[in-house]
Image (cartoon, rainbow, N blue to C red; front, side, top):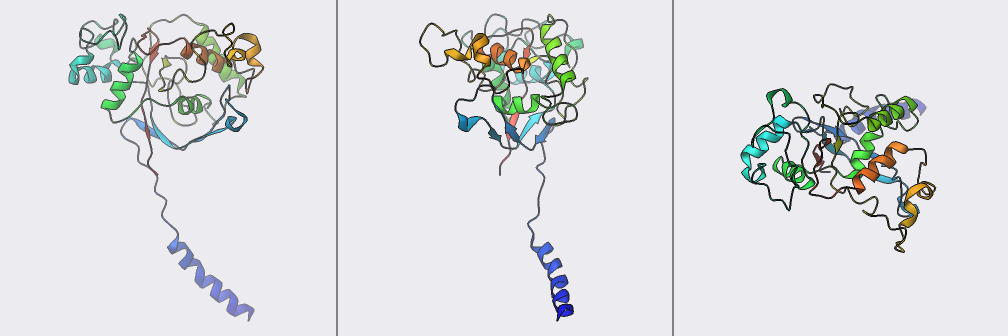
Length: 264
């Protein structure tokens, strides 16, 4: 009887394997990489139920958008040339580092494009059939070290990021020259700051301690007591920087990259 049962079970194994659905790995568009998603832990959760936020899989540019790539966008969309862009959508610094209306110096072609507003970055990504990454997506990637998805306890990495934040902005290097992180993404740190789609969502844009705002405890030293990780100074600096921005602002060290959702 036992021998008969064994024969039946062995016979079922190929049938079960044959009926299992095939798992297809999403193919990223050129220049992008697939990120499997994960758990994002906001620095300031809006409620206990949001201490952990699930991030669904998405595609992300491996490197920030370069002057060369942005020049192609401007050539195809003259309304985004420096001389024609509406001041409502960009400030006076828009592409001010370019030598002409259509491009940077040849030596800077593979350097991240900066002096671009949120509106301009958003338009570029839309032109590419993509979008700006959500803050939760960008921070999920930024938390990774070279070897782990969560580099929060990697003291060397945290010191390196903070040291870069402390340095004055100098000449920018070319994209892709640094080490890729755990997800295979380059230049999230130590090259340029980057726009995200919801850049103003984490903190309000003004100090509201004296205005009776319910978010007033998020500011200054007392605010860190409510943070999910009070020692994560690098994240605090990113949130503070984003909160200081307006969508038309441009700076010499603020670029962007694009993302795409992965259809289920």
